[in-house]
Each structure stands twice: as C-alpha cells, then as structure tokens.
Image 1 (tube, one colour):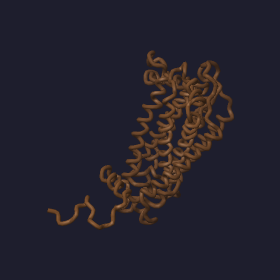
Image 2 (cartoon, rainbow, N blue to C red):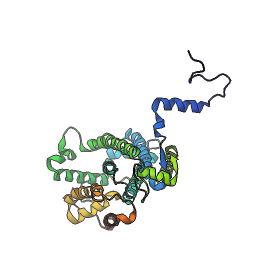
Image 3 (tube, rainbow, N blue to C red):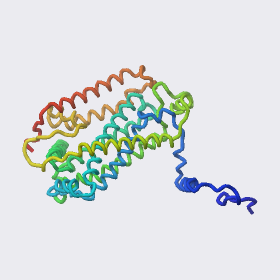
Image 4 (cartoon, one colour):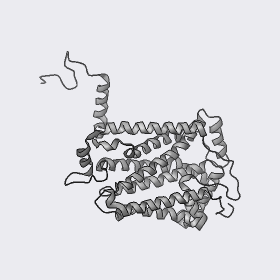
Length: 371
C-alpha cells in the first residue's frame, strides 16, 4: 500500500515540473550523467586549463569534417589527386569543409602543444599524474601520425615526397618497418593503406587514448596551481577548491565549448581567407617541398645528418619527454623549486624553434636519391 503519490506520479494540484527538467532527469537516470557534476577549482575555467578540452573540441570537428571528405576521396594513386580537386571544385561545401579540416588540424596541434607546455610548466605531470603525462605523449604522437598521413593523401608533390620519407624510414627499420613500405603487399597500394590508417586505425587509437586521458583527469582531478600542493588527506585539487572556491564541471564545460567554438570560428575565417593548399600532381624527381610546420625541426636535422636522423630524432625527443616525471620527482610544484627542469625544457623548446626557423630559411634538399 502507498499512502501518498509515488515519485513518478505528480501530486494533484501541485505545480507541474517543466518539461525540460523532466527530460534531463529521465536522461540522467538512464545514463548517469550526474557523475560529471563534480566540483572543480575556479582556475579550471581559465583558458590555460581548458586547452586540453579545446583540443578535444577541435578533434571532434576534425572527425566530423573528415567523415564528410572521405565520402568523395579516391585512395588509389591514379585518382587521388583528381578526387581532391573534385572535392574542391564540385562537391557542395567541399572546398570549405576541406579548408576547415586543414586549418583545424593546424590549430589543434597548436592548442595541444600549448596544453603540453602548460602541463610541463605547472608540474602537472608529477605524482600521481605521471601515467597521464605518458598518455598525453601518446596522444601527441598519434596526432602527428594523422597530420603526416593526411599530408600524403593529397597526393600532390608534398604528399608524394612525404610518402618517400615514409618508405625510407620503413627500410631503415628493416623487418619492423615493412608495413610502411610498398613491399608489404602487392594487392593494395600503400596510399590506400595510409588512407585506412588515417580514417580508421589512427582515429581508433586516438579515441582510446582520449578516453583514457580524460578518465585519469576525472580520477585525479584538475591539477592545482603552482604552489597548491597536496596536504595530508587532501589532494592538490581539493586544496585549490578550498583556497579559490569551487566551480562546477558544468561551468567548466561551458567555458570549454565557448573556447572551442571560438577556435572553430577562427578555422572558418582562415578557410575563407586562405583556403587550403593543393600542389601539382606528384612527379618523380629531386625533392622540391618542405613538410608541414610541426615537422620542420626534423627537416633541419635531416638536412644536417641525413635520413637516419628523421627516424632517431623523434624517438629521442619522445624518450626525453617520457622521462620528465622520473627526473622531476620533487613533490614541490612551485616554479622556484623546479628551476633546473624548467630551464632544460626551455632550452629544448628554443632548440626546436631554432631548427624550425632554420628549415624555413633553407632550400629543400634531396635525401632520397632523387625519389
């Protein structure tokens, strides 16, 4: 027997719950979205602490635009370049979507690098977040793979020469690098396999790393500001909330979406102003192009030390970055207590920027025996 109205049945004469509220309650009861309603420190709503979320927003835009472009792309060497031209000239909104895809990829790499720089500068990779630093590095490496394969798919001169370097590194790896060469199989062109990697393999890996990355952020909490350190049973996140006051994840999400929309608008504006590049059809001969800006430091090293440096330099770079949490084991997050590691990071960043500038001012050189 029930003495009163059930929770599902409104009391006669009582004010009716707004329809939107009832819908949100129904959705929450089925999906458990209230798990996202956790407190965050107020500094989480600043732009520097939303860079990771802005990057995620950009990745969503890239996936959506990429799905559209894939409907019209021909991953066969004889028709790839022509199909890109068809997208630009004949597909409805094709030129705009392709340009947004191109510029958003560049902006995502910028926000990702800024996010990594912020995490490094504030010591947010320290205990207990060491593993998430490594997951973030894996995300960065996967994103570079997507940029590289996307460059090849244009099948213009830049893409053709990028593929040549891909095969060159595959040969340097011997049996481990067979997949990166045309000799892996005679039934499917290597361009088609790189297309599959770009639209299926790498996005799947990226999504898994994103889920893991944000799950760890949820588990450990958003890191405190430099100087806000764990005290007793309180984590640095809880200390930050006590010192600054709390904000909600919903508010954090609104800031994230707002900045994400602004970055998307910037990609749209760049698309309308500059479009996206497509060079002439690939042709054998001496190398004439330079790689996208995120690969320019390695281009300079290749000019100085040959193709082998293009393989080993990224390995050494990622290894150095992976060792950061092991080298900086100090519990202190204050900037003054971390001067040696910050100095080392600054030197590395300046060296990479210097190599990129050198690449911009250096003529393209032949590294692959005339292709």
